[in-house]
Image 1 (cartoon, rainbow, N blue to C red):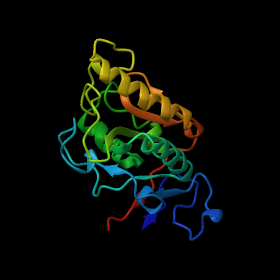
Image 2 (cartoon, rainbow, N blue to C red):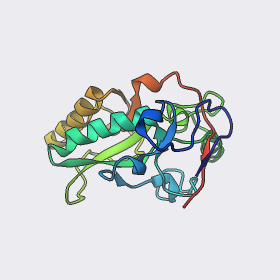
Image 3 (cartoon, rainbow, N blue to C red):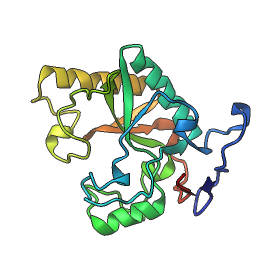
Image 4 (cartoon, rainbow, N blue to C red):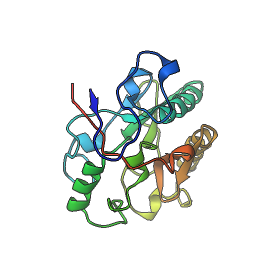
Length: 203
């Protein structure tokens, strides 16, 4: 169950029919597709913070982000791949917790400004094949060196091709890439949505 706390202006409870859902409603991606793979790093300590900051590994995002993600994933699946998710919507309280651990805007967005993750319009992703094997992207998720940049070209040919493929499909599905992080994508139509502190209960 999801509760409304903080700045989010849209209703967050899952409704029964698609026709009733407005684009800014927060929903659980698992309720709308079973075709995604999950490795929600901040629900573990396997991340650059070395700390678990989410209570459970759920991908909550706005409904319009869900629709765009499913469109992208369908395109990837036609080529033999699936999206694996590392992070989705991030409540503002979690952003504050991350900032307390690493107070550096190079690595964590300043919660006083909020991030697109706090707006429900950002996802951190990679690709796997249908056997669950990772597609080579050159660095791990949340590697903050120059090698993670889309502009960095001193990489194996297959890695460059994989990043371009990821970016091409995500861009065609309504997302914008983030230059310094090959895994990060923002839904263009979500950039001006309000920062939210909506919370959800773990099952």
